[in-house]
Length: 235
Length: 330
Image 1 (cartoon, chains in turn purple, cyan):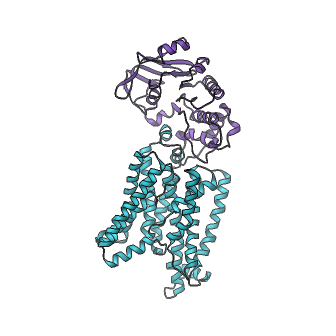
Image 2 (tube, rainbow over the protein chains, first blue to last red):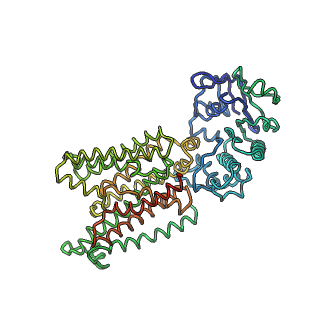
Image 3 (cartoon, chains in turn green, blue):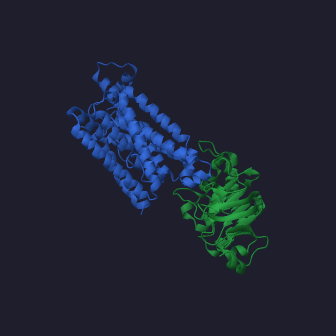
């Protein structure tokens, strides 16, 4: 479980505060907030790319996240950006294999268990038919699924995604969100993602985390808010 | 490594002994296989044919293999580090650093740096310092072209300094430096080859133990960090290996253009992979073959005209680079 208590997030001045937030495995959480509210900054803080301004507690499976070694963190958290980084001459399978990087020796040799993890991740994301295709020869939706498969291959209990639906058409957005929810349940992962696709996520079974516009507070909604409530309090 | 890649590597590797044999028996003087055997097993210093074989042909062939392989790995590491297919020790000014420091060593007359090892040390130091400079510039440049232009500007900047040094130097020193600057594989003696080989081996070993980091670095520094790579250490490590490889070759052979730039790109096109174990071994093998064949052209033309190796590598390499420029940066 990720547990956050009395925490302030921002750069020089606070962007948002969190009184109490507990994010559990098996669940998929979507963070909703207007542009600049601090959604991505929150993810970057969890990844260690930005610092929390102040906090009473930020723990991940009872370990203090702030003092955690970056290498150790790779065993807890994996990340998928809105536009996965690309390179020429890299197949889907090789791309997903890169998720195993923290577990490999210096020579980058993939062992049997690494190959099995890669195969399983590709299967879970439904892209087995694409594994020999080049990453620059598949669609944006397929590429996003390959990035999710890479995160799965990293075999971390927590997967963070920054606007994974941003560049996808409606069908692919729906497919991706449904697949994230299914993976979280099936693999007992905690999936946290940011999104602007309000109607899409409201119609899914994701848990919602909202950043209240006026109070600048991040809260976990016990009851899923309506679109009207979001427009009034969040956007 | 994939089986298909191993097969291609083996096939290309088998071409090296063929090219090496052709290389060793090509030249103004006709030498046969007997001379080769005798020069190695029962060397007679009074026999001019054996002297030519042992002191000129063999070291030159070994140097071509080592220099080609070393420059190609250096280019590959730079291309991955800067995520730029047009990066290379020559283009980014690392060779310029080595050249400038060799120029200082050759033309200032300071005895402690003009000795043979002083020259090597200077080339390595120059390559490393200029590597750090381009690394610092890369922090402020998100654009591939800006970084390349910066490298070219560094090259011009050092050329200006070298020109000033040339104006102020003695005729003898100037001649020595000018000959060195043309680039040649024939200045290396048999007694120098163990040093070259040692640096080359160290470069290959350090490159191979960076494979895990290099593979993920293809996706950028953020991805590398998120996968537990210490990117600061990696950057300086890669600059260090590049300086070691490009510096030692530059010290002994002078600046050789386009090998480090063209070969890794050819290897990527042939193997269609970003897996660096394949790319490193492919660069070593293809680089060695590329420079052996380039020098073979020099030797074939030797009886008619003396062409510096740099001219041949540029004639072959430049069109390849233009092709890559149009294909990948359009």
